[in-house]
Amino acid sequence: MSVKQFQVTFDCAEPVRVGRFWCEVLGYVPPSPPEGFPTWDDAERAGQGSWFACSDPSGAGPRLYFQRVPEGKVVKNRVHLDVRVGTGLVGEERLAALEAECARLIPLGAVRGQLLLADGENESCLNMQDVEGNEFCLD
Image (cartoon, rainbow, N blue to C red; front, side, top):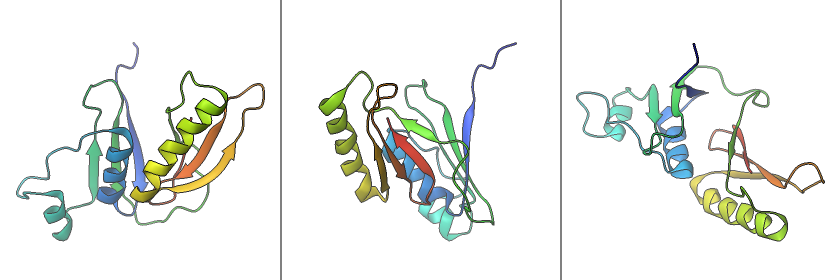
């Protein structure tokens, strides 16, 4: 039997905040707020923001799920997302695409990391962090 679907789960301190960030990064859409709350902000104010999820409106990408945990992030992620903004591009054209996406994400709360230049085996990519310090790459 093969796996048909999967979701990626993030442990975090502020699920709604982190989830909204990833909605903006990926163009994903959030679910309706929990029953009894007109908005996610209302749910959070009432202490119901212990989770958040978002999904690809096309159905092609995996669902992302964000859950509140008591402990903070301590070390580098063992798993991370690669946001594929430079697929098929090389050289200066690829670098320009990475830089443009980085410029779009920084006002959302992303933090720029190290730019890794092409090395003959791998194309250039840009390490970044989301609003809670989780690593991801612009690839």
